[in-house]
Image (cartoon, rainbow, N blue to C red; front, side, top):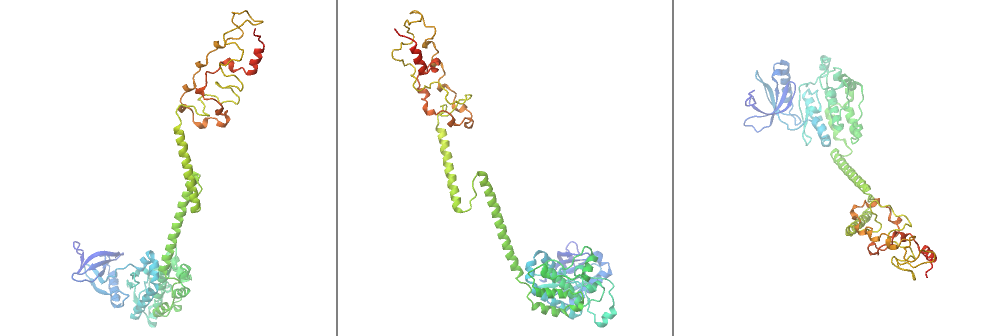
Length: 487
């Protein structure tokens, strides 16, 4: 190999497609040729082992014989001291295993065409006189149209006749992949066409269900299941598979080779006349995807509605159940918003510092029912400054019977003018501004206070009566006057 140019023989290496323990698969090109080619190239360490080089020669020999659309064409083999490889057609498609893992509904949709073409391909191989002996999804390349190419003939062996089977005896070693191996191979019996049929049936089972029919915790446990466990039909894992197809697949996996189909030709004919699925797998998959998408969308809408309902509950608004109820809720919200704005406007229009009805000064005791206030007047009581008919003005005294002579002041009753005048009390308008009052919710309810409308406005009251006069009612005054005799 030329490291600078990445050339092997007359071929230029472009891309490594796959790599194994002894070989690599490369996409290559040949100068002057438009063909798309692939090369199976031996690694340097494996090339030093004669047995490995013999396997490469063996595989090229069988591949060269497989002139069939379901096999790759082999072109050239070259083995020397520098390199060992053979060149074949390059089929730019993934393996069936890859399709099963990543795109199973689409590949299942082509199952009937694919399965029939594979059965006919192995029928051609058997008629050529060779058995594949390692049929599995990894050794089948499939494109999107369902066209297949069988690869890897490293374990292939000749079909033995009756005499050949007697001479061959038991096989020296168990060869094959455990997941797809036939029971007779485990028992080291000579392989037959039915041996390939068993492995192809396991491959079909995995294609239909996404899993092989048997699995074990250990390699020996898996081999024992191939020998003694009866598999279930593919419809057990995939209800879309028909019972007719179940019978075909289970027949290919019979423990006794004699109970399987006599040839791959018979298997292809059975597949051709059988309905494989109740509904097209790809159509079913798309339908289920749409249903799941719609279900997820409904679930998201419900979660969003739940969140909206929770927000409404926090705000004290009932969740709408119908468009009509939603309109009523909206009207209620608008009405409450208008009332709130009107209340705020009324509050802003009030004069600052002015005492409002029902308001209370900081530190002032709540009003008690029946309690007299400055400026208030009892019913029937004369207003301040008025005189009773025949009553002498304040400060003037006549000699009365039983009292000191004229000219001496009356000591028992102090004159009215000697009491402190009302104007010495702080006027109401000098009270602190309204904004210094505590919040309104701390005031006692307005209905517990005496009706404010019965009180005259503070600023319109004349000077209030003197403290002594505030405690005298009309009856007491008449009694007092009756004790005096005016001459």
